[in-house]
Each structure stands twice: as C-alpha cells, then as structure tokens.
Image 1 (tube, rainbow, N blue to C red):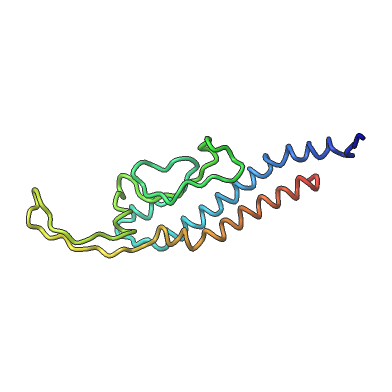
Image 2 (image 1 turned 135 degrees about the horizontal axis):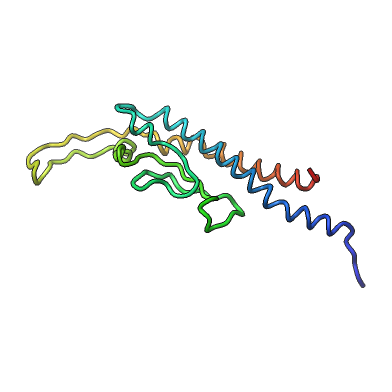
Length: 159
C-alpha cells in the first residue's frame, strides 16, 4: 500500500522558510524587549555623574568587560554557538565600575592597610537592574512567542 501526500513539496518549501522568517521576527522582538528593559533601568538608576546611567545598554553578543549582566538570552531554535543570536543587557564599564555596589549595596567595614582604622559605612542597595528585568520579562517573553507564532502563520499562509 502506497500513500501520496498531495502538496508535500509546497509544505516542505514553507517549512524551510520558517526558520528564516522566525529568526528575523524573534530578533526584532528581542531587540524591542531589550530596549524596554534598558529604558526602565535608566529611569530607575540613581544619577550622580551620569556615568552609570550612560553605561546601561544592550548588545548582540557579549557585554563589555567588567559590566554587570542580567543574562545572555538566546532565541529558541537559534544557533547555540553564534554570538549574533545572543542578546545581553548590561550596566557598568571602566568608568562606572560600581554598578554592583549600587544594585546590591555594600556592608560597613573597617579598612586595613593604607587606610587602617578608617570606618567605611554601609551603602544601602538602590536596585535598578534586576528589578527592571523582573518587571518586564513576562511581557518580553510574550512578544517573542507572538513573533514566533506570527512568522509561522505567515509562512503557512504563503505570505
């Protein structure tokens, strides 16, 4: 008994297009989400000189050395080795090395060495980084899922 699937070639062509269309839409959704998170971080961070606020950004691939990173996020179905498919949100750089101290605060301690006897007071945490991520992660994930679904519908519909 032999079975022939009518339109199999056309279906295979559409399925071959799916990863390309999905990847483009996923990347756009990831960029939009990163921009939203970065905007919220910049609005929440305390500003003294502006160096820390100006260091908050996102990039495809790895963050600059010394920066505080939420995580590197890779879209599903994307290459696990290519940094071009990994988005990273970060804060801090050579000028704003103190991003961690602002986010998590510091404990009081007595200095030793050259500053022996000096008491350094505790600095209260002023969260801006992870709170922005947590506030936006569900919405960003939803946008990425919608991008995948939309690209699948477009490929299936032939557009």
